[in-house]
Length: 542
Image 1: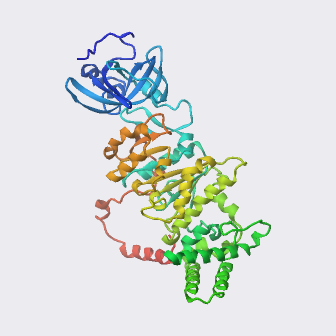
Image 2: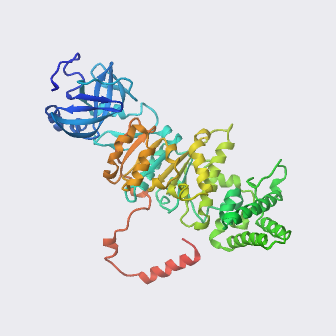
Image 3: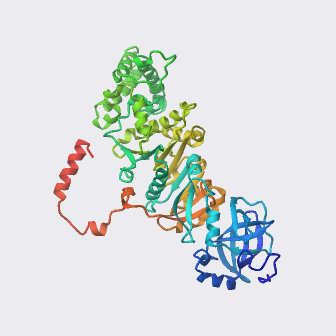
């Protein structure tokens, strides 16, 4: 039986009271036999962190080779000789003369031995472990179970190495995203953030700090689409017919771009060259090409593309993109507005897609994402302007290949995830269904913010992609409270469970649930409401 009163080479009070001793060590942590008599007095300590000693998530320190090894309690169970705790290694710190901790770093190069004593950490020591060592940071909440130690994210690492925010519906995922973005732009009023917002949730949250773009003011020129995006919008066929339609569209699109006045002076023009062309030129090319053939099958292919193009031009819902007025070179103005160049103190662009027809929404996201990446690629040698692209409902745009085999928007977003960091582009993925994402997307994220996930398949998918240092905390995913999350990865000093800060109502996204018990208790005005709703519906004015 272990002797909790065993003598030590250090003074008895060095490092604080011994609350347990090591009874087993393995590569990722150790097993600790707790001393209830040593822990009991600490429950009433005036230090709120010491008062949580022995609870799940609390920290301990053990001396090894003149360093403190820091561990986090992940489980407690009854043992044959008293309570035992399973502890994960977090990292190491230097030992101060008074037994305190200093200069925390991840990873463990020296391991404790069986019988070594474990000490509780104070509030000051816990703050030191989770501190950012003077690096730029944003604070987002309070670390559990401390009740007082602030949870901080490394500003630069979080943004530069991609991040993911995941959580089931109703857990506070959108509010957590808004909180983090507000903290970021508060420190960087001249930043460049683009948010893809499929439901129009974030317009209210950033009405003062950003600019909202929707179908009324987006003015996205159709000619900014590359060939694959043209195919996404204009082709409706499948199989061999689609292959033939692609060949036809490639020839006609190249013809239209080559005839553009903006093609003069260019060494070469391709179907992807981002220069304006007249929609009438594309239509003329389709008519001219169809007149050269006699086979009825091929004629049908031309007619199918032409019919789809005419439909888009007639439909007022597509005017934000296919208005003939957008045939001039507005590329610099469009990029300046969307990428916030300059930011003018409003560094965030909210792209409200709630009014975009479903037939073209993927192409719109693809164009926006590709513009972000291409701007960064072709700006090498210029003053760096890093850009953060945040995709809400990311599983819509980066679907697993088992869901969608062909997806231009997935291709460009996956490229940003894999290569964007080299060019100064970072990707933020926000989703409630991580298991529906493309297989490699989450694995490219350096930092994870995980709110409660109820679906077991989603939990397993996140577990597979989660950074190694935080996997042990994922057992708590189904038990997290609303607005509570686990943050792990390169964006934090060590994996943390955080109770997120309250956000001012004026800065929250419009994603709150209706209160049925109140709304269904009153009546009146339904007729007038319907008249206004139908009027907006028919006029396509929100």
